[in-house]
Length: 274
Image (cartoon, rainbow, N blue to C red):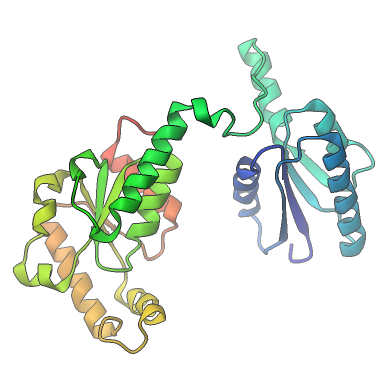
């Protein structure tokens, strides 16, 4: 695997090819070299990619793995022709054509996930969710929290910001995030701005050792990053969430996808988009 090269070839952004391909590759050990080739929407572009694949095959001494999501038949045939030395895995032909037969209808053969974005209500909702999450990052604003689908709470550097942005970008969820700070622990109460929206809150926590490591990268040798302070903050935050009956999970050993999926499972938003 260390000597293999994997191509992700798409007539759109390549997000589908790469996401699906990486899910499959994760079942195998090693880290192959990734080559991304988005917006391959013509035969000439496809032919150049085939040349690149063949060059890499000769250099590596192993045929590259090629994940493709191409809806244009001529472009796809160029990649799947016998002169392409890669192992080509055509995800559209593998899944879409059997479904066309099962449903008895032709698919729309739309190029890319984001076609006609100007006319897409889902795209507009996604942008609105991203803007909302950015405006409500790290407690910057308490305005319009009633519009939030979820409010992530936790100590600084527990993963709130990346999770809220992932929820917005991938699922159109309006996710605010609010830090729990030492002053809150001294008062033994969640921030007053969150009190009316306690039912929307979801907590993130983290192992103190990992938290200290992350904080040292930001503020080396500070009290903020000291292990003793991190232990105190994590304990206080978890006790506060328990008292307030706020559901929470540890982000220490979870991917952002796992964290987001757990949150979505618990909050069950009606507007959930996959």
